[in-house]
Length: 106
Length: 117
Figure 1 (cartoon, rainbow over the protein chains, first blue to last red):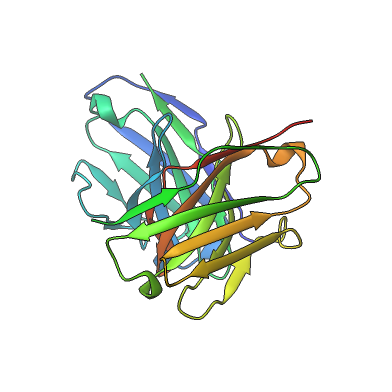
Figure 2 (cartoon, rainbow over the protein chains, first blue to last red; figure 1 turned 60 degrees about the horizontal axis):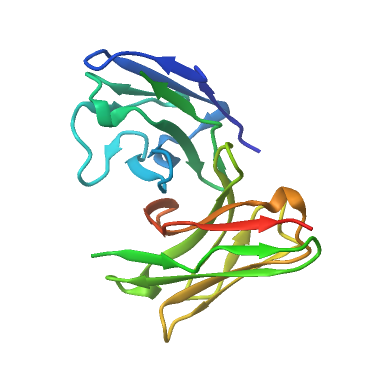
């Protein structure tokens, strides 16, 4: 079973700063099956990326994602106030699992 | 526009069952899967299972596979998730989500299920 480990658990930054979030898989996975979601308090998750690097509809280009094998980073180039949230990676290949999340806080 | 509207909050006793509904609109219901994901208070996301409204095929997480039943009613574009033999650690917000090629692109608003004696 694939285990996704996200780091750091919490990222404390200020608006305008760059955020880099890590998602590492316990074994090599196809990048075709890696997604990222954003969740704000009291809301459902929102799809950011699928296939590791494909931006979902309406996602601003300050968000970027990439990766292959076991390492899949998510970058927010300049944090806006609305970007402070929890971010989850997900593997959706022959099994389905989420990482434990990274909270981006002010 | 795509919408998934879930049923309201539930309070159940340990050992009981709960059935959560998820009514879809704004797209062809049988063209996409429906996944169920839960989130315990203050915790992360846990994938529970998936159903194809087209074929009825299901896939569920090992942790709940003996207790969960997922169904759909294509006439009303509604998906259902029933969880049996509830335990206190089943207390969570349960989300349905439209699933396209394995990832979830639209989500319901969530249904809080509280299990308490």
